[in-house]
Image (cartoon, rainbow, N blue to C red; front, top):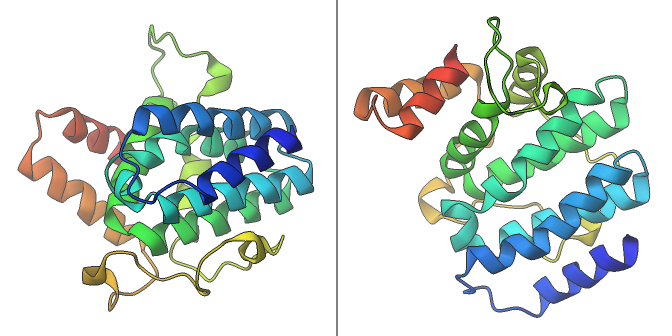
Length: 212
């Protein structure tokens, strides 16, 4: 698994940053997703997968500004929710999500909400085709969301493997003067804005699910 993830990471390094085919990118990211799901508690594989995600988000900034995070957020949040007793794993995912937020800000948050909304458990049972093991408890997601407003250490020295200027900065110049912390109130405000603008849209329904 390590060899495959290293291969994908190397392919990303030598691929043009203006690569625009998200569908092809998905095939490579699935390799990393699979390795992470199978070996998420192996710190060496965890470190390599997380650095590959950050490198991909930085290298393919145009794709990740639109829909790239939809390809990786779900497995990461599922792992986070299902391994709450593993503090190293959870702190690592919190740190990586904070780096994602620093890079892309609101586009990342909107994609994160869109990816997580179908996975959130509801009080009333539904006929969803999702297996219960794929769903996440809202409390775990709330905890992850809270971490975006806090200082988060790099427990595995992941940034050492990231091929970018450190510390990471916003890729869109319009966010470069904004705070690198996002509060829960900021998240609620973003959801309300989307709902007010297009409450009947798919994204509006996703924001309602997250607020619920």
